[in-house]
Length: 367
Image (tube, rainbow, N blue to C red):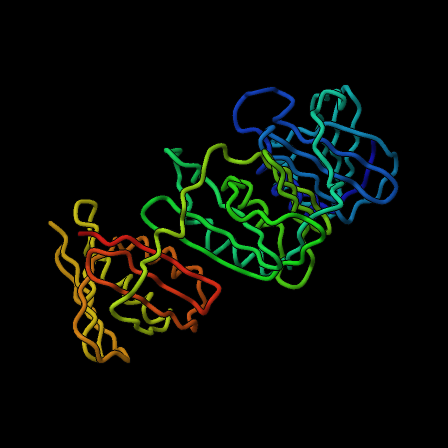
C-alpha cells in the first residue's frame, strides 16, 4: 500500500481512531490501526473488541491500493510533530515508512490479516436521527452516567426508540438526565423498556464524529451490540450488560413550586457560591424566596459565601441543599440564554430541572 496524505487530515483521523485503540495489552495487534486503501479513498480501522471504528480518511491520493497495519501511537506522534503539508505513507507486512520532504520514519510492519474484522452497517431496518440533534442530546446526558459498575447497568447511556421519537437516558443513582428528539423509523421495532445501554466511551466517540446540521445518522440496536453510521464512519459497540433501572419512577408525582430561571445567571451564581465549599462540606444551600434566590455555602476551613440573584417567584420560601457539581455539570452543557423551569417539592425530595419538553434533569438533594 502506498498513499499521499494531507498531514492534518490524517492526524485528525488518527486522533479519532485512537479512541477505539486498545489501551491494555489484550492483543498486540489491537494497539495498531488498519488502513485499507482503494481507488481514491482510504478506510482507517481501530478496535479494542468492545468498541470499533471504520473511518473514511479524506484528502488521500492512493498510488498503490492495498492493506496495511499502522502503529497507532507512533504514527500519531509523527503526524503531530511533522511540518510537511503532505506525507507519503508506504506499508508492507515487514515495514511501515512515513516520508516527508526532509525526514523519514520507518516502523516494523504487521500482517493485516491478523487484524480482527469490524462489522459494517448492513441492516435494512434502522432508525435515523439528525446529527445536530443527536450531538446535543449526547452532550446533555452522557456526563450523568455512572463512572463505575454497580448493581444496575448504568455505565453508559440508555437508548430508547418509540414511534418517531428517540430518548437518551443517563444516571449514576444521584442524578438523572433525559433528552428527547425526533427520529425517523425505517422499519425497526420500538425499544422502549429494553436495556440498550451504550458505554460512555462509545458515546464520546460518536459525539466527536457528529457535526451540527441535518446529516443523517443511522442507528441499529441489536440484543448485545449497537451500530451507528454517519457519512464518513461506522461505529460498532458492545452494550453494557445488565438491567437498567426504571428511571421513570425517579420523577416526583407532584411539585410544590415551579420556578423559572435563566441558565447563564444561575450557572454563574452556583459557581460563585461553590468557591467556599470543600471536600468535607461539598454543599450549597438554595433558598427560593419572594423575588430572589439566595445561595449560601460554608467550608470547614475555607470560609463562607453568600450569593443572591433576582427571581420571578412569589411563593413561600423553599430551602434545599445540593452538591454544586451536579448542577454545574448540567448547566455547562446548556446555552446561557436557555430558560430553566425548576420543580421543587421540598428539601428532601428530588428536584427536576426542565428545558422545554425535551430535556429533564433530576437531582437528589443533600439532607
